[in-house]
Length: 389
Image 1 (spheres, rainbow, N blue to C red):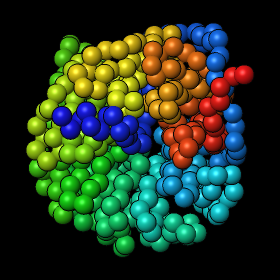
Image 2: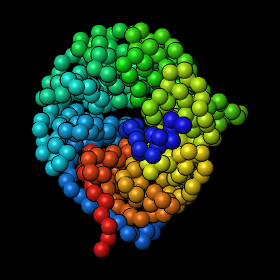
Image 3: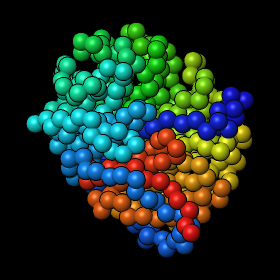
Image 4: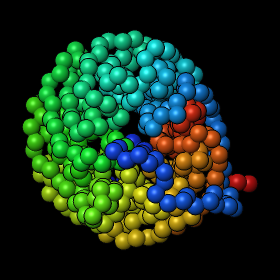
């Protein structure tokens, strides 16, 4: 099977996190009381290779602005208008710009441009070389998901279910697709996948839809979850994570829905199993790892999806997507702690306080298995996992 070959190779993509606010609902409380911080007999430590501050980070807003690692550089931004480029090896600043406006989403990028979305719903293209503004285009409403580009077009997805494509060089609007989304949704944002000839978007109605990149016409749709229950909260079926690309298939998971592998060309389901998560799954060592919506972390065997282990000591701590680094998983939580789990059995192997404002976006694995971490306050660091002596 295709997925078996890819799982063993340990492929994955960066995806966005989830925001614990419900659009259309007055409450921003957690669904359950979070588990207390577990005591851990540490066998590994997270050592800081370098760290810096990126403006005011999310500036107390429910955003998911995250750094972008391109291999040679890291691009990072903050809600209060800071955009910068640094070297991954030592954090040396290559360039930095400070804009007067506030940002709600980004940075996305292609070879030439960075893309940010402002609080006033403007898509802004910046030079990847020095951060200078190239063009901007007005959007109809708020965007929380990172803009995505294939070099020819840049695509944004609004919180009310519109997918809008612009010409990457000029900013001209090329096409728009509108999906019907429920009144009550989780304030989350799954960035679209933008390929050479297809755009795949995930919506708050529990559907994944493939569109032609040329003109935004629907090609297929797949239902990750069906609303069930009497109340609007019970009927939530949001998709909060960008689908994972696995050769000719995508893996997607929804809140109160299922985890599924879907053929990328036809939208046909290859397999599925019940699951509930605000995040994309992570893959490593031939297995699938998932941060469930209730804060449990679980591992599934890649070839048959059999449950290997469940870690429930982090329940309701609003976990990020797992980052897989060698034999370990690293997960952040709402109190700003980083937790290191054994990929083999899920046991807690390490713990570190990183950002007292919390961690909303997932850690990213960069060259050498080091971890790029960004906290809600704007603290950004590259960490390494070291065995305790």
